Image (cartoon, rainbow, N blue to C red; front, side, top):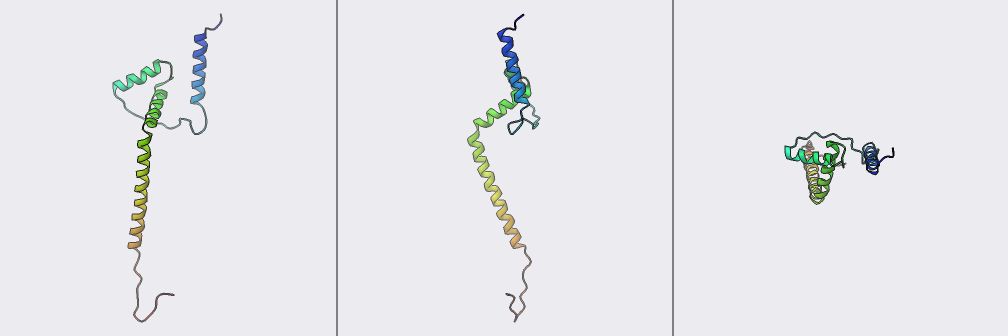
Length: 115
């Protein structure tokens, strides 16, 4: 019996997702984050899975995190800039403290310590 077009499309879709999940390189999802969500958000995640667009809650949640970060890119750019400024100030403070805590050079009267 010939395979229906819908069944073929579902099989192709699953195969694309399988390849996406197991790809190598920088886009690979290999970091685990555990998160608690309320019932309403879990229901929305389950709707994404039920729609057939995602094979698991993990895939749906990863999609939502990615979309959320992309939608707030301007905010993340500002955060990165402030973090860079904070790190610069910490370095400056460390240098200032190191300079202030150096042992003082002793000066003996009648001698020149500069050589």
